[in-house]
Length: 429
Image 1 (spheres, rainbow, N blue to C red):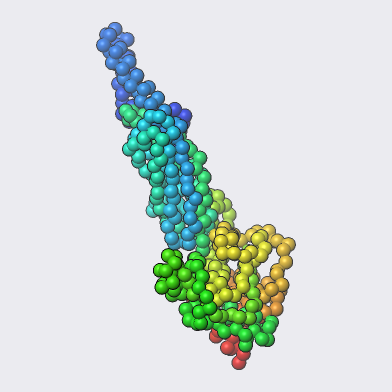
Image 2: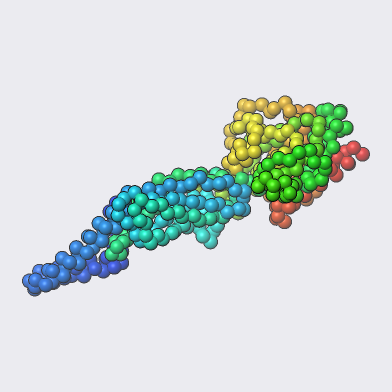
């Protein structure tokens, strides 16, 4: 930024910065004043004085036009990765005079804006023509979200050059807000990883449970719709009668054995690789990027969690920095913000059966009885089919995941639904 741009920015923030017309009028007024001192012509003094007075008056009015406003940003509803965030702001004029012709400028969080290279995180702008006294106007815009994360808005800028348009003035107003982008939840019709969990620990579990598919089975009761429920489970006749969505709750998983989804955040997930995307919320130049494997692991946790919830299987989430968690909202918010750790945590693993998601094969030998595991063998290493040597050496079956989502996220869903069943059949034989 040059000295001229720094001076213009300082003037616009602290008083007023002349626009192009203001600079032209100011230059002409200066020229008239110099000519008047040489010729001693009175009309030149008048012309220069009127021009400078107009520039100063425009700066004063523009500065007053952006003062004493009330701005408030409404809470931003959480969305899943790939959906659009909806940002709503309320602008109120508490003064007795009408405000007119000003512009609102909302700076998108850098971590969110960097996900759209063509736009480059450009601020969102909205022009307002008139704001009567003691009235509130609403500005709503949407912005796409590509990756999970927690994104924070801080301020909004009001700019105005009214009424003469010769000078621009701006003022920043505090309008904090937080947007939570949840990880993608893959629709799983079946999941042998959870269907088989607990059989080795409880011999009666196999005969007690009758896992049904996500859309078939005997209806036990009806309950309000929860985020993540299958649309096929909605009972439309009852929903129309009550005025809100009601979902069929099916009989299934009567054994009562709970499961803990544990994410190994201490594994070497984060490494610097050419072409990796920056970590959401990381500072420019910060070492390390989020490996694609870790993003797959987070998506797998969210998908397995809602699969277990739909089948009435008690489920919790565990990580080294959060401990055991329950509840849809709390778990999703943690998954939105979770990042790999660089320092080990002293928290021990819970004693319940785990679904252990890790990138370290050595950690598989410390799992509790009845556990399962998902292993991402390494960044940049493509695994199209499971390696039998990686799971036959352990007492608990698991799944070696592919490290690339080039065909799309459906490949991750296919691995969660099919490959473990093939391994279990091979192991039993």
